[in-house]
Length: 302
Image (cartoon, rainbow, N blue to C red; front, side, top):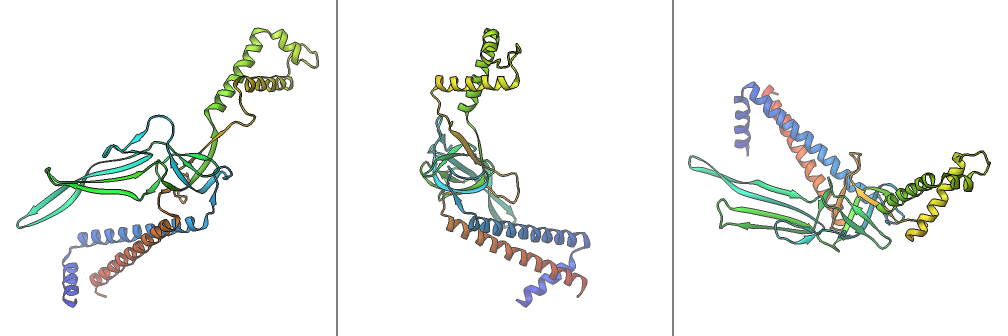
């Protein structure tokens, strides 16, 4: 061990100043990055622990935690390009084995040649309702992950596929926002169309029905009464309920400290995953920081 340390000290002393400071900057960058990852991962674990699980029907607007099942939306199905499996979400990566030779020595590594992550919408459904999930920019963890190799081609390839299937258990934490659905938008358009029709087709009849102060014009207050009647008529024509169904979306929050997470793993397993990664990041921070301080001490002769 002493021989190894002595050899490293000699290497450090032999570096010229630009080389030494480049190495120092790299070590400092690794240390800072590790600290940031440690904080972020531990913060995520604490958020998952502390934020209570909400029900979709009664969830407040904002950053919420939901637990349910993944469900497909109507329309074209989502298919994983690697295995042609029907799913609600996929992520895949294709890598090629690269070999580098230098004299009698050689090294190998895997190089990514193709990758893709699904951005198709799907539903998260619990026992009270469902919401749309927009997976763009989410950190996704899934139990359904496969890796396989093809050695009969040159160069050899490695394939990795991750899937979320319909009816898989799904944990989600992100920005929950309720917006008017397509039916509500169409309802508003039909009301406006009916009011224009009344106004243009028979303005005298409109004045006769709603000009309560008999000034020969329909005031803003009287026009509101006409709008209410138009809404009632459109509801009757379309068979709408008094309360139209609303569409809720779970998506990425604009706040950087509110991570968007989707997982088929249990909440307990997810917390353990983030805490383990936080611990590894702490080790990386301490190791790179210690090496940097030791290298500087060797260099300046302390």
